[in-house]
Length: 153
Image (tube, rainbow, N blue to C red):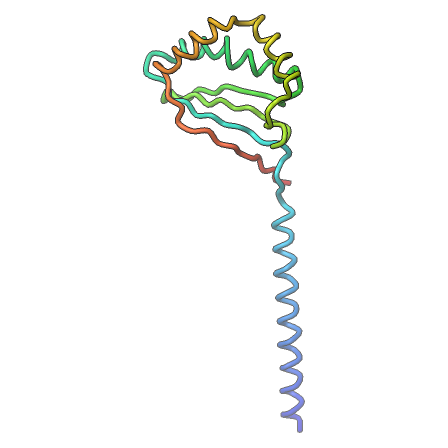
């Protein structure tokens, strides 16, 4: 009879042990998920390969076109920020931070007109076209990615 009691106690013990293991595994899984979260917004990252000895020319052009346009877009509240990074292998990384994916939708006609009015004060349409055509000779767009930042708590 004592043999039977040991078997029942062992069975109940195993059941409790299994429940404890399952409970802790769920707790550790939920803690892992809560340790990080996606940051708001999205970043558009463009990687550009610039021909050797043309990096300064490319950056000069970017300053008049890409940087100037993003400065206006930031003032208008369409983007949160923008940046240019240069690597030691003639790659240029252009990033534009949007507050959300929805902010990447096309601008309204009114917003486009407002933007163009401000942008034409910086560079004429002829100069902009000439710069853009010149880019094709000195650079290659390697890729464009949409990336999200992860925040670790």
